[in-house]
Image (cartoon, rainbow, N blue to C red; front, side, top):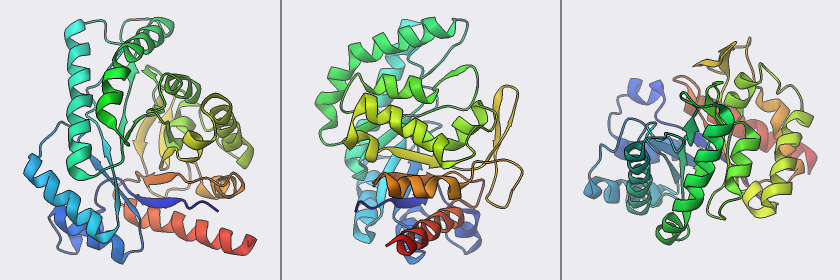
Length: 287
């Protein structure tokens, strides 16, 4: 039986309320709460020295917390401007260097947005660009992965089919299924186990067993409107989904080995632990 791992994206408010300030304190704090993962965000750019990354990576390794990274939000492989395309390549290359320094095993990135193009034009340009550049990334990645993310807004490229299809380009691409984003984009479509199975089944068909079972997952409840995602919520918010209880049996049925990262607003560690407890209890009841 494979094992699903759980952890937060960033530090919860409680981390700071308990008097902690430094990322060096994060690994032990997470371990003491029974969590397995941490996603470090470089969303606003790479504001860390290599020396710090090496030290921080050792701290996470010492405590047995598996690291993933989130690349800068500025990446857009569908931007027609060649200079911006070159910058997107640079963001990925720098991220791969930080993956190595931090001993992270995967990096999430937002692949593209439509801009003034039609969706078809943007998807085509993004796909062709990544086909062009992935061989170079593959040389640098080694045993690490890039994880394009499903997106939550109408003008962003990133339906689950778009992301899975993108991942067919290279075996070093594995999908990030952000189920909060998927639910927001589709106006609350994730309501049962069958809704999750439909997504995983498409991935099994296109990408095979290994990459699907080891997929990256973001999970949080998200408020949405006509154009998709509005804001992240907490598990205390009951009006909007998705709900982990609908996903947990699918993870077990399909013997998944996913990394499940919680992106709740301020309570990501607490909600990660809630998901892990539900998963372990369900697993025990079924054994």
